[in-house]
Image 1: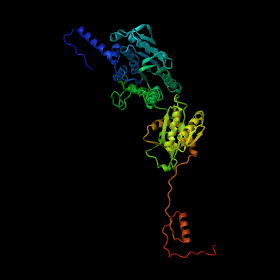
Image 2: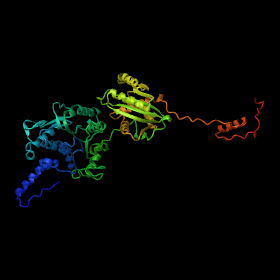
Image 3: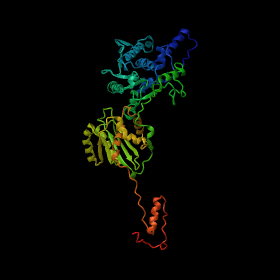
Image 4: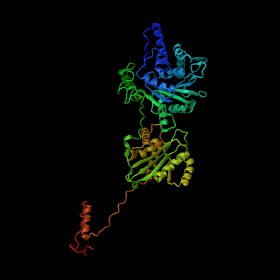
Length: 526
């Protein structure tokens, strides 16, 4: 950062005026300088510059999707939800902002605070053209005078139809642990984002998600998963600042160093860790939520393989869990398995996607053809009844066939997986060590039944249901060499048999022809 070097012949008043002009100039382009100018008592911590740098890139359009993950009470809301919206409107007075939080009250509080910053004397010295329109100045909805810019505050879950956003801020969409551990609440937030928040975006708009992590299936977790699985989704830039530094720390701290020692020192952080407990500390302070462990499968049960056994020793089978269409939360999953002569199960191929029925039917037939699958397992139900005519039709048209077998699955999750879990516990299930889909599959298996999704588990459960009728692979037959006469006498053959019964291996050499007694049967024995 360049420093102001004033001429030596200036008077004290002229020097102060020059410094003031410099501070205002910096505050127009630097968020940290803006924060200090509009909030003179604001303390800049070691993490604030990198946070400001990311927010400035959002304002310039360089970053369109930003996640800020920080522990509580480290000024993330002060920087992101109070100072930054005012800074952004100063640079973009014709743009629209929507700011959302877990409740309307908190969102309105942010709206009132941002409005107060924009209306302040300090702000007018930095951005004199950006002023509150007195005609529209409610704390949850206000406009910029003589410009198109506006600010709208909304609670997560509330309707914001009719409003657009060049910048959409979501600050703490989850209120507390009770909400975080509720699958219904997490789903409610997710559906609000997809159906209400996202469709408010103007072209090339930016989204900033500011939150303390509570759960691995929270909004941040779902957004990252969706972007990873679909290349059409704009990738997220993630600024994760744990309270204790880990490897490759964003601000260059050594491992274990606390984030803001002048604010919360090591003793403070140690107490926070002791009071919060491991699960809460890892989630809220380290921003690494510990996933809920299931009790049906354990990661160390599963084996890896690099190369399949010889094909003549394998039989190939498949199974599917179908979803209605690509609009539901559920995925359609296809799996292909190979069973060897020792009943080992090799997971050969895997496909998981939210897709229309025509697409997943084609993929299923592709897998049957590719791997010469002899039998395919499905779950009986309405989805199969609807899709069955299409599957049969496309199999005939493509000339690809295999036996299809369907089952009614038990409603109890633990009962459903009992067979395949038993095989896994015996270390009979093997995953390839070079496929990306294995990580996600293992993740779901080891969370079951506590996890959100179980469609991949259901595919393995279907395989387990079919195990009783599956035929393992066959060993290659060894054709014996042509037998040759041994020239053993009958007595010698009987003696050799007795040796075998005693577990003694007889000598394979036959006696020389002409050097043994003639064959004789005692008449009394006959």
